[in-house]
Amino acid sequence: MGAETTVTVEKARATSGKPRTTSWQLKEMLTAWIFSLPAFLLLLVFLIIPFFMAIYFSFTNQTLIPGPIPTEFVGFRNFARLLQDDTFHRALLNNFLFGIIVVPVQTTFALFLAILANQKIRGIYVFRTIYFSPVVTTIAVISVVWSFLYNPDQGLINQFLKSISFGHIPNLQWLNDVHLALPAIIIMSIWQGVGFQMMIYLAGLQSIPDSLY
Image 1 (cartoon, rainbow, N blue to C red):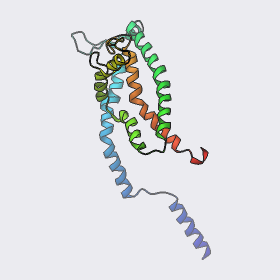
Image 2 (cartoon, rainbow, N blue to C red):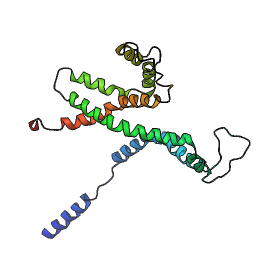
Image 3 (cartoon, rainbow, N blue to C red):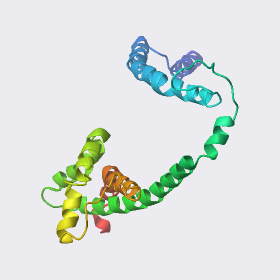
Image 4 (cartoon, one colour):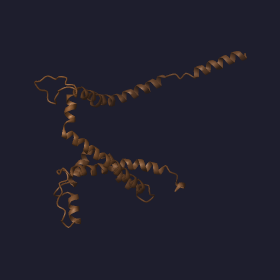
């Protein structure tokens, strides 16, 4: 009797140790794949396929507008031409300057805002929303707003500079001057992305127990 009970218990343990996929789990899995399919198709059409097509076309003489000349394989000729292009060199320099300025300034400013937003004062949630609102605003809206701010004649920034300098600072061509275009974009980028880093710092500050400070 005891031996039969032991064998039965061991069989039950062996059976219970192997999880079985029920019909409900299969249905849940199928539903998840169905809901994921549209997103996967969009990624496939607009990201994955264009990515590999771009790699293929970079080794050919394919143009954006098909012409009478058939597409031919040219090897690394396009890359050699790119490395000799002064515009490409300038673009690399601009990206380098953009990165070394935006990252530290935005990070420092985000930490400062996170410390302010972590204060326990009335209406602090309103300030957090204001600080974070540029992150959830589309880049199209941000571009329109800052184009008005950078307007040479009626822009708020130029008007402010003229008022504090008593008219000695002329109207600056923020987006038309080769020396001011990059700083203008840097300022806009810092303003647009600082809220996201602020929320990361704020989450870290709020996880610190109050007994430590």
